[in-house]
Image (cartoon, rainbow, N blue to C red; front, side):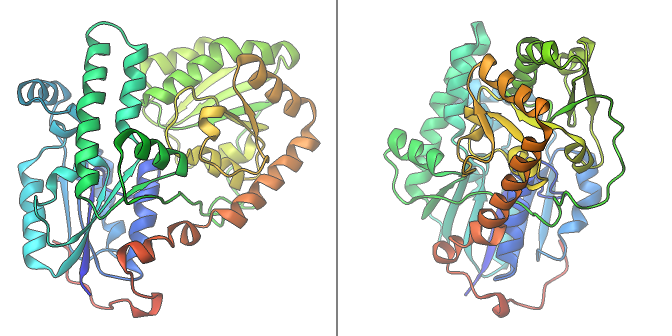
Length: 406
């Protein structure tokens, strides 16, 4: 049995954001059964310094800095009639790295993480190809196109159309296409007519996200409402803006001391401006989100647009926090009624208000939510479907020798 070549649009270490968490845990799972080689992009200088964190999980590694300006990617997209999502990740060095890996190693499976990386798979691969789309990106851009005007709206609709065609072509060639939830997988089957489509859900490390662990205390005055996420990501920006401008005022009528903390790296100017509203703070990047979750009276996920499974919701559940999520953010999570789900401003505001008014019941919901993820969301359980898809070896059949990193 041969090795696995893992292609990733972002170096999956440290596992500190949704896509990197999924990719890291898949690599960990695969590496316990086969040797895994990695070719990935880096877009954060800090990631280049910490890439050695993957040394125990991978054989040869090639990490390439992604420096192409978005404007250049856009021009190339228009000239080549390709999606910006592909031209932004089109890189000669990565093409050479993939060719070299396939030539030098006995690889029998190419695991492609995100559709941007499918362009590096040979046209007629001799290897099994597993395409992990995670989410259906073309559907996301279609949603953006419905709410954007002018040139931006035209580009979003164009991206949705071209990327959809790319996704369909990739799925037709792949031995298996993976999505993070059954809802996302079914949407892809319906829109693309694709076969060999499977749901491989995200898990959560409940030992890491343990409400009983000791963290540096977050000083709080009044009730603390927390949102966590990457704060230059459009759905997160739109979600917290909606919450601050339309939902939080209703909550503060009943709980005037309630505070809302937006916790996450790279907040845009629009997000930072939300701190001007009463009771709102924007932390920027924090070393660890767990103390903020531990300190929260309630965690919210008020996303209007969400694809797949929201790790932020699973993390809050694991930390035994009461959670209020929009219907979009809750989709794909088998929460068993252990979180509050709302659709409208009134429904979300009322749910948060109920929890703040009755902390005991909120704590009970949090305890049930933690037990839910313990019972249903271990990473090994979620990823076990890969055993049949890839023909993985058993845990004790793992190769012991690894070559030096490239």
